[in-house]
Image (cartoon, rainbow, N blue to C red; front, side, top):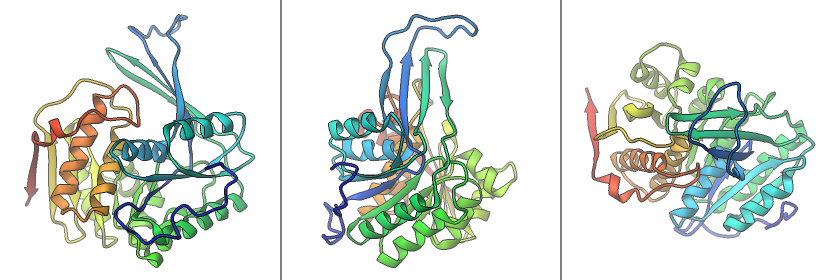
Length: 321
């Protein structure tokens, strides 16, 4: 599907098991990854050709879902010289998309992977105009009735309307479609209050939205603002799932994995999205999110995961009193 294609990819179908999951990406990027033996600050490096492809959290979520045999549609604003690269890469991957052309140049992110760890350089992105925000919401509104679930994830460009994520939630609710939000700050609070089915902040986003230093306390206070589930990712410490009434569960792998953590959060979002769309129980959602997140650490690049089935049996889920 070309960026100019105005046809609906979902709205003509009922939300059947093969209906798509919509992946809204407000701040897409071209992701560039270099893998080298050592990063020496202040010196020049001769490096292998970097891997470059369409990215941004929502795009990576769509890639993981596609890898797991789910239909995922990318909805995003794209502008500047990388537009053709972005479209070509999604087409090559077989991921359908509805892209709107904007004047703002799409950002780039760079990951430098070494045995000692991964260094990420993420551009902020550029503001897009009010008409483009309206157009994004119009596409979501058009596609929502035939979708199994809507995901809106990733960083937001400067000057994003304060109620954008809440608007996505309201559109989803109006169409009877579950909605999963992965964002931080006030946008996260507004999305929960608007009735999001689930949200998945990381530790930083959780504290940015709620303050404090205890992730369980912050997740409980956030969950109490709405009616859905808060999944809080805690890096190597695993993941929390918290309900509005304060009930909580913790999941973790039986040991810490070595690898590239870039994209682990995106894999968790993809897992939660699939699990909710399939009607899985909360514990199944949490276990799948933890397993897919760990499987992403073993993959070479964000948007792909190793076989999660090998990890699923090593997840420990503990109810929190």
